[in-house]
Length: 185
Image (cartoon, rainbow, N blue to C red; front, side, top):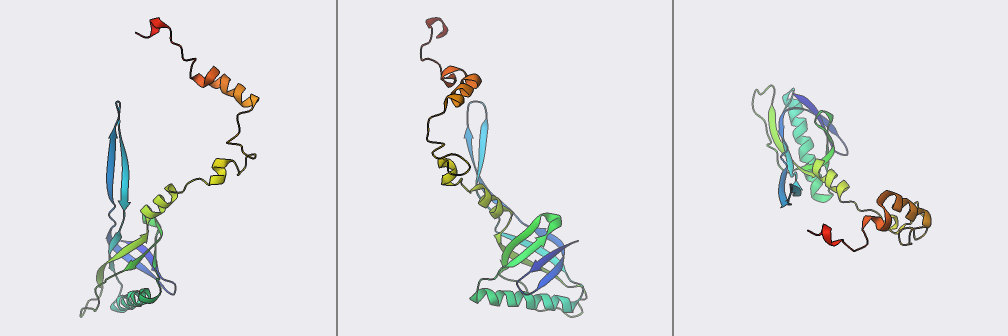
């Protein structure tokens, strides 16, 4: 059993989680070259997390039911998300919505359990894809950040050409365009 904090703008609950599932769905595109195969994961999604929790008492379970009900009613007017924090499982500031949860209670259920699903808005996948899809600023490409004016678009200086020749040889390692006849076959 592990403890996870689920919170809204007004209230927070510490849940005793018995089990959870957070599947990741993806499509992988592959490309074959002469020497190796390369795989590109595309369309990755992590739509929800389902968990089973146990409560210390019926009163605590009823308070949690009211908390979820208030959250669902608030989502109808103004979008308000729940925040999930569970450092043991690397779940930090994931947000989502509880679309449905069983209500009511049972008689003489001294340690009630409930399984519910949180539809995720921000999760591990969305955080990683957001970071990976950020492009460089056009100013960095053009030469406006930390470089001189027109740094990328100007021809290299004599010192830069000399350094390039030292590393790659004359003509940047491209060659002169003539090939001796003996080396063709």
